[in-house]
Length: 325
Length: 176
Image (cartoon, each protein chain N blue to C red):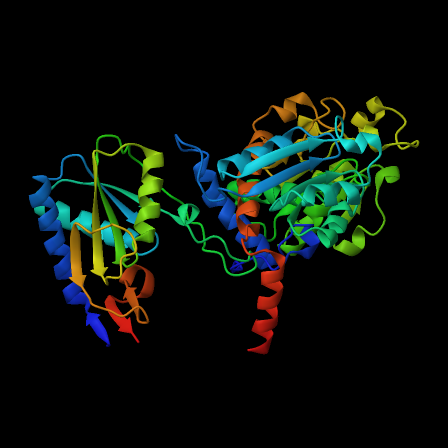
């Protein structure tokens, strides 16, 4: 795989918009960024003077902290906003909030929103670069990228790797982004969940779909567990948590079917005893904390690659020139 | 102007620089060689080899990437970005004399960035600058301590250093 030399878009809205070479570029850059976190002075001046706004309309611990840390390690000025205590709780629309904040001329906006497509809407009305930090049940591109970096560190390849993704599939933006990334990079993906939580169209995306966790885990190099998203379940999806664990929980016994050097991943936050047994989460297979560490490096890479200085108009006019030449 | 340094001349220059380093520092105690990516790294490796041939001692080596310290990131993000490579400095810089190694010295901006980067890794006792080619046109008050060859150039020209380790052959060429 040859890496691209730049990203084609100035936004990161989803894995769907990325070509394999661009994914490779982000991952290569992230490997170099990881070293910054290992230094005595964990900060480089790259984004000095840039303003980044972190808009989190949905609760988040690790993604928000991880983005903030990545921004600070690159010396950007950061501002954070959460729903409570902001005008959003007074009924302001996303578009109006965005226009208001845009008037303060941020260079980048990191957005987490419960509505799928919210970052795409923002990208149409804002001059700043938009980074999707999770939109509804659509995409969570930086999560898929950090997952890929974590897999690469252990397996040194994605091509031909067998990855099982198990859990609450229908509500999962992590699933969607991971399926797009992994299939694009040549991995074989199997997805497993209860029939009530299977999204339509998965098999057309090149994914083997099953309702048997044993079948999904069989021979897998990577098992990725997804969180049961109680907060998004406004219907009768599951009879009970106990029953879910019995049929879909990952236990050491089930994991024995996987490849001998299998790694277990989870995007967090974990529901211990619901989708994953503590013995697995804390066991030798687990790379869950590596995922968190890699999150900072991947986000630094994305911020660096999206950082441009001349703004939208300059780019647009240059694009015209390039076409004329 | 075609090839201005061939493989022999590059080798002789590096051997001479190694002798100058030993003379100026009265040996190689507390020295550390740090090459700037990309072509400073193999040059630092060759200098380490030359220093061992002279003194029998091994000098610590590291590689530095200065991309994150550059002052020219203000450009559209969709144009080619400089590739960020891994910095690897497996020794402490504190109280060491650092020999910073690069292929071509031009405006001095790369070295300015490298000095900033090194400061983040520790507090060297001194930093000395080694370059294979000095082509002039400094924009900052920076001067080299050891130079392979001074090559007068115009700003329009480009100086290409090619090394076996990266390019398959050793030569320095000035292109119009």
